[in-house]
Length: 253
Image 1 (spheres, rainbow, N blue to C red):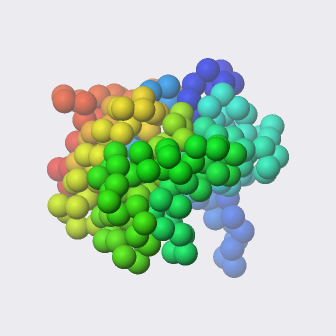
Image 2 (image 1 turned 90 degrees about the vertical axis):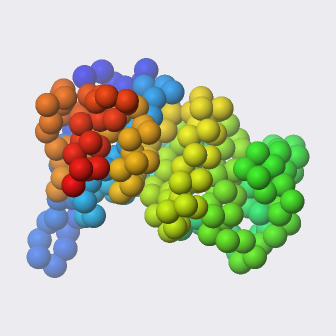
């Protein structure tokens, strides 16, 4: 495989181990993948399969025990923590299951935060525009505790996209929402992703949401599960309608 600097996201032979009271535990075992610019990838699998750990490593939030990761053309192992933080701030957006809004800041201030950290002088104007885009222009001065779960996730989406990231990482973005609200958040996520031409990496248990991605990768006990469409360790095949074979199996389970 190449060094991955031409891809939006690249991982080669990535492993993660931790030491516990019963010895060394392998969370991820030699995972390799590549995501091209503008692509969308769903990472699926049972709880405990390593999905969120993999997402954190790909985003540079944690370091692998071994292997190579390149994010937005930058080799993460060549960067110190400060440089990785700058890369995330300028090139990456995040959406989490638990929203991660700051309770002491109102919606507009939460969306402004990444822009202010990046030194933008138009942070308030851009935040107001982003909130209007997700249907919350009239609630921009409300605090998280004054918003429903779905509204909080809309604020989180506005914050994730406000600085025009190259790549968006979404970890169970509908996991804390009821089915109807979650479906609306999914629609908004993919609409914003198309609008911004962002590369999307999505971790989800929701087979319907995963099927909307161009490709799907299934983890099982820390390794990429083999399938008929597998190639070089990566599940990349599409089934009819853009649903991968792995996602089709999950939807039928």
